[in-house]
Length: 126
Image 1 (tube, rainbow, N blue to C red):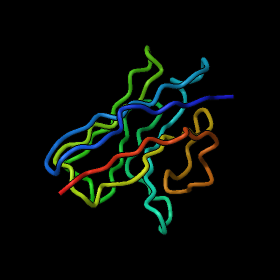
Image 2 (image 1 turned 135 degrees about the vertical axis):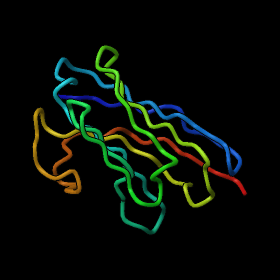
Image 3 (image 1 turned 90 degrees about the vertical axis):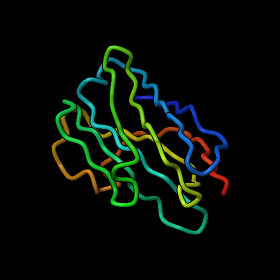
Image 4 (image 1 turned 180 degrees about the vertical axis):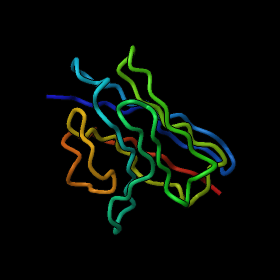
């Protein structure tokens, strides 16, 4: 069982930055690939970024590429999402999610994420 707790959301003006953190419980974090998703009311949850358990592979959605960076600190059981040059369209609830240990399948498959955090609200004002 893995428990995930996000933090770092809040209200920021357009052009500003936020760093989200996702702290994980359990001793298998270093073997778990992590995704960041966001959800806007009335829309499907979308994958924003991903980092493989080894850290060697990352993915960013086209809308955030070049502005967002994901990283992980396995010693702290934490994954981060640094968000720069924020836009009002980035306003959403952001979730971190974990796949099974050593999962090698697609990061696009939302069903492959077994554990989810509670979400943190990010609001970008214009």
